[in-house]
Image (cartoon, rainbow, N blue to C red; front, side):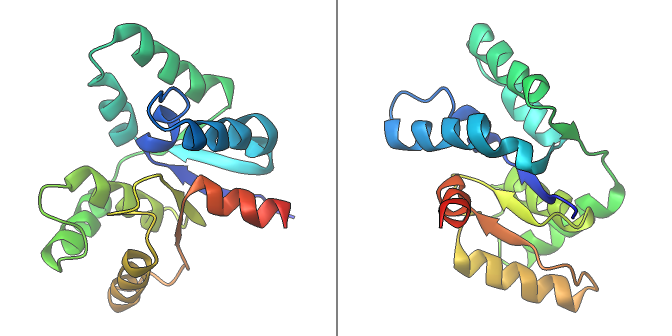
Length: 160
């Protein structure tokens, strides 16, 4: 049986090191340590760019080490991903000032990813956004059923 494909947005990696949300940090650690090998994990240049913006170089390097430690694969960019992001923004699904979030969705859509994993409840891990993205994707010819979930939701599915 093929493993589910999970695209990790930057929040998932950054919450491994968060000190202001201990519950999210523990859930994220549990996902990586105990369950990440059950999935094919992916990131994009956008994730690497967001990590590189970290002003704390030690933390930035620790975040980059996570991508190597857990064998997270980097997806290649494509013009169609930019086009998808524009569609999500132009149709009001993702706010204009959240281009990176739209690109995360674009990568997940373009590469037929099963789950876009995020702690960003406002713009990504949100059932309303998921519904709007699925509808928009169907309109433009992307039929793969992308889910937008948080690590907690994935762990709940595993442990049930």
